[in-house]
Image (cartoon, rainbow, N blue to C red; front, side):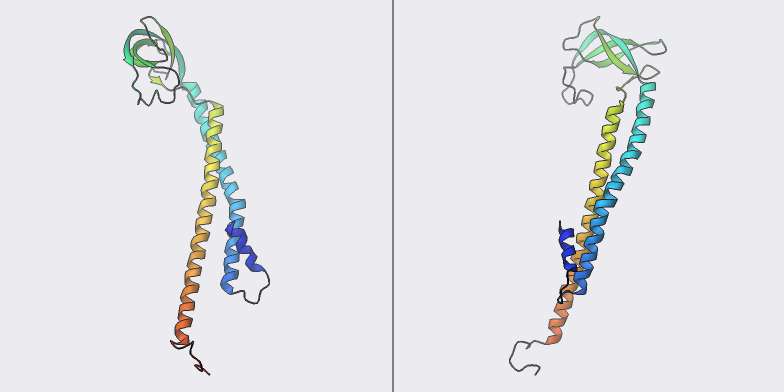
Length: 200
């Protein structure tokens, strides 16, 4: 908004100083950068992020495999601060389980199961890599797109914020320089500038 008000200084005015005109040019450049460059930057970052995330999602969908695991015995509730269970609305329990790898080899180990009260022999799904190591659910296309949109929006906001910060810094320095010139002019006028008859 301040960038727009700075353009008002271009109106015809005999009292308009060179610094006022310079501030108006700074405001115009900032306005153009915010309305043109910031959205283009956001779009570019969004497209690059979309391409990268979609490739990662396709790779994960090829390398992450769903398998059915079987509970050997329960190991207790998952700790509240467990990052694997954060964000999961359902109760999760730690269990010792057996599961087959995609190549057919058998694996056993402690895992988190989406079971409220697991018992030996219960089945639950989990994701593994080609070697049978437990991994995360693969990134889906919709989530990848959502992350790319957020990245693009964030880049546009960051660009606009940097442009506005640069504009404010430039104007602040111009105002400081103007005040310094005024102070020098007052010093040249002398300490008795307000007395009657001085300078006449």
